[in-house]
Image (tube, rainbow, N blue to C red; front, top):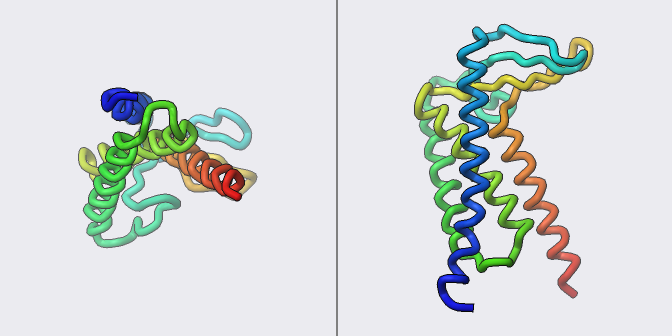
Length: 165
């Protein structure tokens, strides 16, 4: 394997990250155009499409902070994104597909939410599950991508641990 083939591995996975960012930003733009904040459409008895602005992190963590959290989450997303890009670019072609897919999904989700934080100061969430009067935190495609990516990273780690004697 020559040096071009070695370095080509990670670049291919960046396309998945770009697709996640494009889908995330397109869906958020559509929601922002068609819904006012807290306006909703019942899709299923347990699912609403509801536009919400989240200034915090997952589950609205730190949403009531004084504003410093925006810059903290921007710095965190930039740092994590750069680390993942370097990791992906160092991967060899054909190796660690589960790991690479997980990293690419986390990267795409992080960048999708990063764009919102930089552009509007909060993240647009719109997928909202509930059961009777129990409402779960709303989320978006970027959050879903991060969750699936983290799941793939855990699965990769478990499979890797089983392969080692």
